[in-house]
Amino acid sequence: MSDPLFDAADDAAKPLQAEEREQLIPTYIISRAELNEIEHIGVSDADRWVFSRKRGDVLDTNFLLTLHRRMFREVWRWAGELRTTGRNIGVDPIQIGVQLRQLTDDVQYWIDNATFSPDEIVARFHHKLVWIHPFQNGNGRHARLAADLLAVRLGRPRFTWGSANLVVPAQTRRLYVEALRAADKHDIAPLLTFVRS
Ligand SMILES: Nc1ncnc2c1ncn2[C@@H]1O[C@H](COP(=O)(O)OP(=O)(O)O)[C@@H](O)[C@H]1O
Ligand SMILES: [Mg+2]
Image 1 (cartoon, helix red, strand yellow):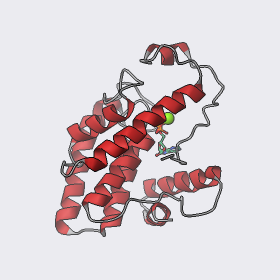
Image 2: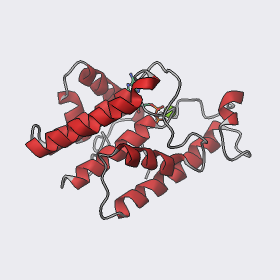
Image 3: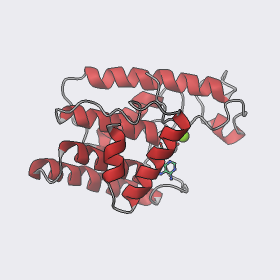
């Protein structure tokens, strides 16, 4: 299952930087295209694995790390490990653990109290998870899969993430990022529409 929201704009032909290659598990990989491909295999595999489990709590920090590890364990040494360096997106690395705990607690509270509709709970969960940006990479793909799993656990179908519309991937991606930015400004409506579009 391909993920049109994954931004392979990291030019597929661009060679990997030395510091990126150091963290790579398969040493034969040299191009972005090959990297994207083996990442994709791991992500699809994790997708099948996670939905084959009958139970298991998505609102658990350890599970969220396990899921990321499952997705990227064949590719990156830091799969399933929290980011330790700053990025232009995401909280300060020392805040990640606390923020994840806060998020899972908040979401559990929203579920227990039916604070929002199930879809809105899941959309808010997704937004906050990528906002935290727990990992060095793969945050978008991880937080979309985690959101889909939560949706299903709440008795809803998986999100469509813009794929129901016949628009080009670049445009879908733009709508997605705009919706995340609106959510940053406390307007969840565009994201709520987008995930079921
Ligand atoms: N302003 C933004 N621009 C792009 N992506 C953003 C922005 N804000 C949050 N994000 C999220 O970050 C993700 C990209 O982070 P990254 O760790 O590279 O994930 P992946 O490798 O799975 O694409 C996007 O898919 C999106 O969910
Ligand atoms: Mg990325």
